[in-house]
Length: 290
Length: 276
Image (cartoon, rainbow over the protein chains, first blue to last red):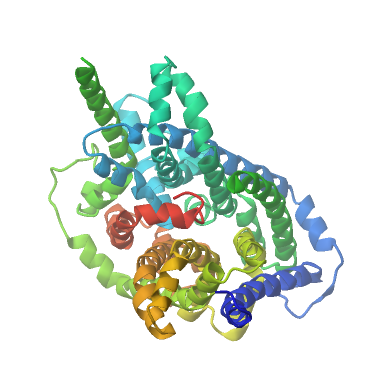
């Protein structure tokens, strides 16, 4: 089938997608690099010039940078741990025989389809609001003082909201993987007297390792660039308590109008994401080819 | 005996799973419910579950006052437009990678996946400045193009895994029976590819509809899709829970329904075919 002729045709068919993606990556990337060494403020666009590494110095020595870096890690790891652990438990539960399994599944995956701005605003106003939120009513009804989630524990609250959004994704993928588990192997282990816990540890978990890897990989890509949830709930505050790297670069460039320093931040974000990506690609490379 | 134990276990599993399912779904349920309340009832203490005066007033107010139909249309045009454009570019690419794989095919696919790892904020400034200089800031066309490009790797991957499953022998059999290239494509390949293309379309529309980094940063009043429109509710302006709920319900309903129909394909699409 693959004659010389069809090979050439195939190249032509791949070309548009490849060229476009290459352009989409390279052109903005080069521009970000260029701006990161220039003085460029949107309010005083006429004063330009090369500034060497000064933008990087400013960005990296900004105390907000360390906060944002730590917040980014806490946010990503926090959501990953919550969604993977609860996702495994939920997937095992949903795999049990029960009445109305299809409906429960539909209920559980629903949050994934809610747009980020809606879920953030609904949680912020209707649940976490210290005056009118449902949590405040519940606290008052039980005789406790209402808790102002988004100003007392902004990052933890955002982790909660984002976990609610991503738990369905983890559950759905892990459930799909569990359903492909060989039931004969399970039964054999059960006959041999293996306890439920050891069956989980020695059969289910190893079987899920590939799916867990995939969940971690995909979620990390999306979690590193969480933005809308922070923008509509806390605006990164109070102070920098819930600012992640994505939000910091946005604030620096489009709120402070400093394109140069924002670009330096963008380059830093790309480098950090690449470190994570290399690590992750190695991990899935091992797990996916097997 | 074993029967009775299983039955009991099934009941317990049912109870636990339904409790958790309802808890997870509750915020969505509550939003839909609140959209039918008056603003006063929406913040009533204690909150009422079903015993309130149901009203459709909020939907009317949201539609009239805030130009909701415009934002809804923006969402439709941006998500459908970027999906169609993406398909036009991705179908030939995925097709040839699945049927005429070369030595580099695996690498090209991996490279495409790796472009998804580029954090959007790293290219925010250039894209913002380019859009500004081209005069397409706050326009639908800019978002269609940007969303096409960010979702292109997912479309290619998803189509590739579907096309890969079409057995080559069928093509050979058709050719042996004297099918021309045209009838081969029309009567053999297309019918087999349609389900895969349909799920790709569905998933991509969902992703584009909910995309909230570029839509928030590249639009203002004119081209703002629902993601950006809803975000404008984040500034508190007095009693607005019921209206926020009505606007939110309208924004999520179409996608929620589409999503429920595409749950199976979702797994495959979002895991780049690694989990089926």
